[in-house]
Length: 461
Image (tube, rainbow, N blue to C red; front, side, top):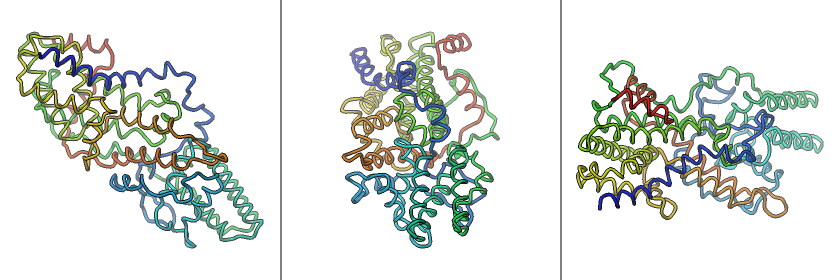
């Protein structure tokens, strides 16, 4: 009975692990789906909402603040009405709607949701330089028609763009060069007072090395015993250190990385995603290794049981990505075929594994996982593969443009909401105390290929 049940669990969990393995190989099979050309990268890359970074230097005339809504707000935003934009809009209509978000003092009236959608998601359709060119064209038209209020709002809009998404202007010279030419145009037209709204000198003084992944740091002060066998660690300790590594990896994925994945449908040229997938696969292989390296069935069953408790702790911590990796490793055929080992596993442990396997089942598009995930508040790490699949599904199901060649704003909003929810989770670090020595040891031993596995087996035996 146990072996057949284990085979069933293997068939349930392996689609998730296989999905990660497949995504890691897609770049080899989809050369025709290049992420972006080097020229496009130079002018077209975007940044995460709020830039995912901090600094001691703030924009002139503005308090040190970033627009970082909570995950709860994100859920609310996903159903916000787009009004007349629901049926689509031309770029000019979308820009005009954004301009109406500013009052006479340049402050955002009400929600900045539409502004954030437009300034982040336009990259899927046009380059950032093209968007700036459209704004400059509108400014020239407003000058010709003697509309000073319109000119001012356009400058307010560009200022908002600079302040909220300043990394774009720092990284891509074509964009900053176009902005400098725009300032020259303003001076030539006698509108010198508007140039101060478009100041960018402060950008180079910003400390942009801070990342969401640095919200959590390992404890360097505590010295403790470490072993390649990890038998000195309690399950909760091991779960915490795996969560530390997973959160750091998850936080390195930026808004633009998700956008590039949408456009290319593969991991090619997205190294942070490739590393995240490699970590997941590495943990799964390492779990198999730790069980199979024990010489007797009794010892293998003890290690198996320990990792079930690690998985339980990961579940309680809402770290679903590592939970998937651990359970996937335990349900691998290399372990499930060991009848003597499974006979030594207590029935209550097998029951726990069954429950977690059902949670991670791909049935009904991972419905059990989605329900559990949506009920969680605060810290949580999603199963990245499932949510990447959602992004591709939305992108494929909805067209970029609707009738009369209008931008499908609903699609931009749907993709923005999906990505922004993942980005906001990076702002909520787990409450744990990771030891630097243990973290370093884990990063060394987590295998990512068969050569490392063979070497590791040789060391611990």
